[in-house]
Image (cartoon, rainbow, N blue to C red; front, side, top):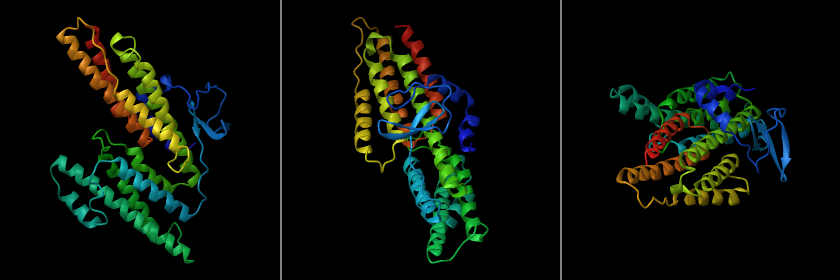
Length: 332
């Protein structure tokens, strides 16, 4: 099994234990069988799936092993990284030296964090530029080995960007998503088949994070008259989110899956809570807090599904918020 399988678990063991206890199996829920081994593949409803850690995940054939394929994969992953992270990190573009000077000169911790994020973006761009040149040389018949200085420089830039990526936040302003930053580096350093395996595993972990959030939400809001019907909406959104996170944007099915994901999220966000007729001011305040907490949970599921990596820190913070809310509502 690849090292990427254990990356998140080593960082957040308590969260992943909670995820494991909250799991349901995706794809018109299939019962999880203890004898199913990770990496098992089978056809479900005419589509191929692969099993990892409690979930059947949509399987996609890896690209062929070549520098051109690796470049295409890295380009895609780099764009995806910029898309899901805070604005401004790609501002330096290709001005790596200027970005590094600004980072080294910064002394205020808050400013230095942002400069670190901008330097990470410039490093990604430099590594991608070098790899593009290598692929162009290969297409002209010039073979570049892994020991070539250009290849070594490319790897160093990706690795440094990975380290600085710990300073980068999600575009929501929530926690950083280090594992997303690590994907271009992994795509550069390991075989393409191994990279795809790591992504199937990461999607499975993402599905677990989605289901954990859904369980926390239904445990918090379910069973109270003010939120009658909320369980079905939460579970429908979680189901749509699991399908969204496993589906590649190039897949024709995205034209069915994406609208369902967005519509289910809108319906959940528009849920109208009904306060009791004799609701006290304290209870009315708790209900408003609950409404805001419901939207926060919906948004967090959205971010996790679209980034396709777990967000353990934000999940723990949300779990704490829901526990405090339950205690507040218990007094109503």
